[in-house]
Length: 107
Image 1: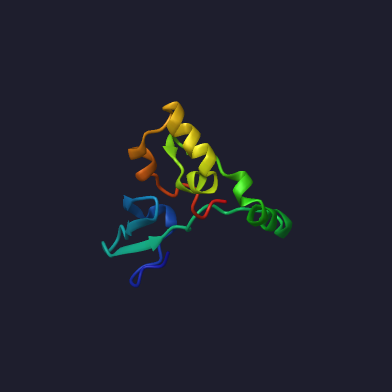
Image 2 (image 1 turned 90 degrees about the horizontal axis):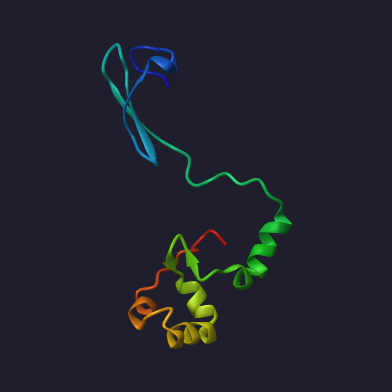
């Protein structure tokens, strides 16, 4: 990172704030503050065939839960399973109504 006034080594920069999406640095010499974005998402090294397979077989890859949260995509894709889960008492109508899209963009 280059300061307008100085060109210090990156190790000399003070990280003021750090989140999942960005970092804020401060120049130790002049105090000028810079905000930099971090990479968006996880880098994935895979072939086009695997990506196409995920699109083609998306429904088969869906799981009912992700990190303990019920999947709206799964409930919509498998209405018979949803009805069975309601009948068996595994889910309540309120849980089905409040289900979120937990697999969005990952499958």
